[in-house]
Length: 147
Image (cartoon, rainbow, N blue to C red):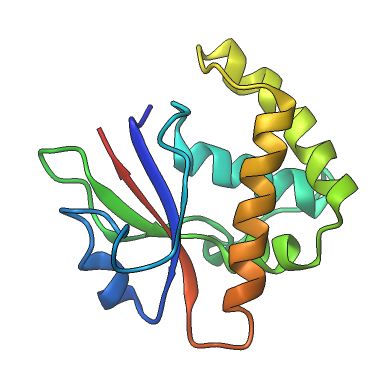
């Protein structure tokens, strides 16, 4: 689990990777999830699967989080959110986000994370707003994590 988690939009993989050592805050607008301890890459996959719908959907490699700055000794890394997740976040209704949060929370609580559904809805709604703001620009969504 990561102690520091920030979602942000950046214009390129190189620009996103450049924040690995210090984080994106101060350089980009961020959705800060640092007060919640969870595995961000696992959460992104769960959110994608829950928003996609059909259980028979088999994601391709481009539907997975893609590392743009690999983990280093301090535990920091940056990965790009899957396009499919970003597209679904842009179009998700408040009820869909609540449903996804409600399905995701029990799994992360079982892993020892202290979060309730309302807090998860706020987090996911803020990430969806970030995705909507980046739509139509060169920006992609990324996640910075650090221990």
